[in-house]
Image (cartoon, rainbow, N blue to C red; front, top):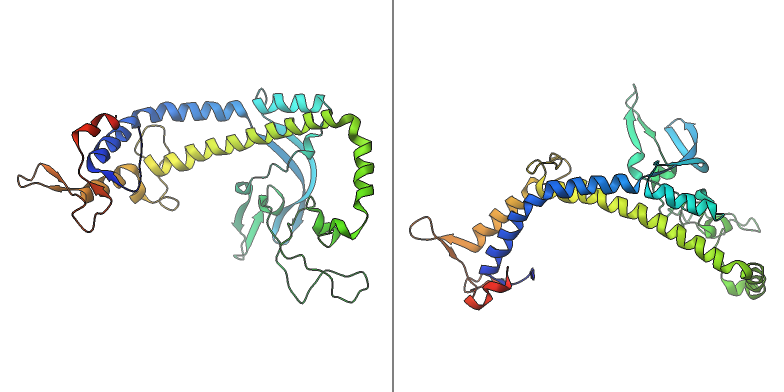
Length: 287
C-alpha cells in the first residue's frame, strides 16, 4: 500500500484511513510484544558516587559499580564482553535523564535528586568572556570552555584547549601507539564490536519504550486496550488518530442533499488543492 502524504485522490484517503482504523485491532498484541521484547533486552544500570549538596543529591562521574537484568540479552552480551577482557564500566555512561527528580523543601526551595551525573545529560558548557580558562602564563587570556562537553570523557575540556595535531610531532606518537597495539588490533576490534552491540541493544530498548509510551499513547491513549491513559499535560487529545481522521474527513467530504451521503470535495475548491477525484482503475492500488 503506497501512502502519499501531500496530494492524493479522495478515494485513496477513504481506503487508507479505513485500513488504519481496522488495523487498530493489532494494538493489544503489539503492546504485549513490546513489553516482552523490552523485558528480553534487559536494562543496564551504572552506579555513581553520591555527593550531598545544599541543592540536593547529585552524582559525580566516578563509577562505583553496575548491574544488569538477570537472564537478559544484555547480560549475555556483557558476559561475553567481560570474558574477552572488556571493562563494562568503560563502554558507556548508560545515563537516563528521567532518573532525576525534583522536590520542594519546607522553605519552598527546589531539591534535586540525581540518578546520574549532570542529571543524566551530556551538554555543551556555557562560556563567559570575563571568565576564561587559566592560561599558562597566568595572564587570564586563556581559551574558553564554551561549547565543550561537560564530561571527563571529552578530552579538550580537560586539556584546556582543542589541540591541533600540527601543534606537536603527533606522527611519532601515533606511530609508537600503533606499534604497541598492532599485534592486538583484531582483539580490540572484537571488543569494539561487542560494545557497539551492547549500545545498540540499549538504544533499541529506548526506541521500543518510546513506541509504547509515547507514539501509541498519543495515537490511542485511553482508547485501545493495553494503551496507557492519555495524560493531558503531556499529550494533545486533538492528535488522537480518531480525532485527526474525523477532522480530515469533515474537510475532504461534505454532506449531500439527503443529509446522509458524503460527497467528496475536489481540487476545484481553492481551499483544498491537495485532493482530486479518484478513478476506478485506482481501486486496487489502495488495498
